[in-house]
Image 1 (cartoon, rainbow, N blue to C red):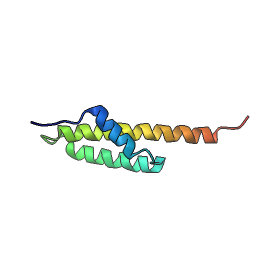
Image 2: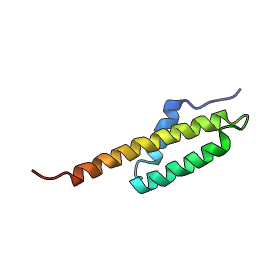
Image 3: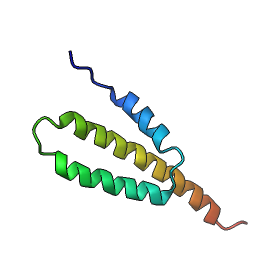
Length: 79
C-alpha cells in the first residue's frame, strides 16, 4: 500500500523548514526548486516528487512575501 503525504501536511512541513529564511535564502531555494523541477517534471513516475517540489515552492513564496512585507514596513516613511 502506497502512502501519500497530503498537500496540507507537506505545506506545514515546508513552512516550518523555511520559517527563519531571509529573502536571499528564499530566492536561492526557489531557484534550486525550479532547476530540480525542470529535471524531473517530464520523467515518468516522478509525479509525487514534482508535487512535493510545487508544495515547497508555495511555502517558500509565502515566506518570501512575509519577508517582503517586513522590509516594506521598515522602509516606509515615518509620518
